[in-house]
Length: 187
Image (cartoon, rainbow, N blue to C red; front, side, top):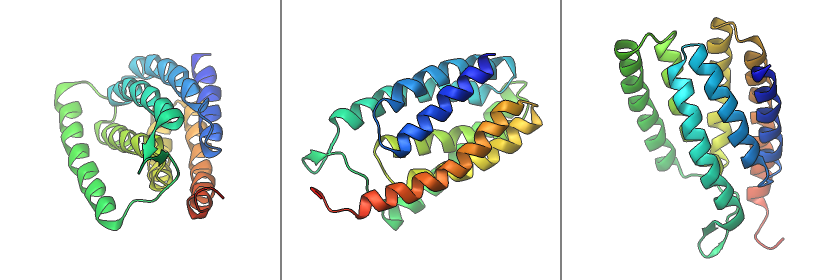
């Protein structure tokens, strides 16, 4: 039952995020709390820890979307430059290796490499979402597809389905935010 409620809350978060509605963030906090409990029980420690990160980033994201600013203007959708993207890809790779080694050697993690990648990638994508970068949705697409494999492996079928749906919604989010980024301020 916890998994199904978390599923519904997480789906609501994604749908409201695509529409840039700040109310998405409290849904994320609730979903992350429930998923944290579920992942602990499934020995997906990276995913469980990720939920704590999600809760903190969701609180920050909520503030960013309601009071954040870029260049003395309210926070608007924008896109990273190529050097920023490359730096984030390298940082994600290094952090994934370190997290996988830590999970693999320090715990009885069920799938340290997939758990590490999806944990690191999710944190990065969530921070980019909080700052309204279109690039967040590309990160979410990759993370969500890998997460499907991880959750199928752990027989968390509703969660695997959720992440498959979220992969499709990542594409929709990217298109919506790309259009929003192309609209001049004040239009």
